[in-house]
Length: 101
View 1 (cartoon, rainbow, N blue to C red):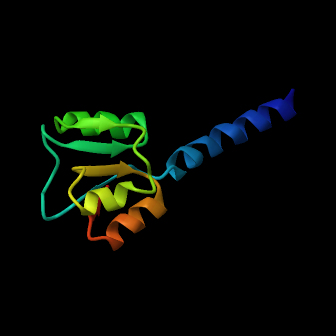
View 2: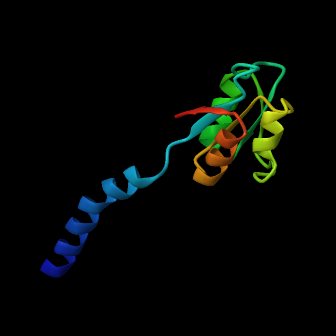
């Protein structure tokens, strides 16, 4: 019984660290066009990211191809990319996007 208590206690102590380890959602926009609005589409990859896109009044596209999203953003084809994927964020920044959590 004590071993079970120690295991559960350890698990409870570690759980907040695991929860904090998740990468935050980052919003990347094309600075030429500003923040997304009602006439924009936004690439998003989580429910939280898509909810944020909808809060801008934009159309949330949950299945937008992550390989092409940074380039579509650079060309003004989409209004923003909301993601926690570090590679996607780096690619968007390399193509001129401004990204903030």
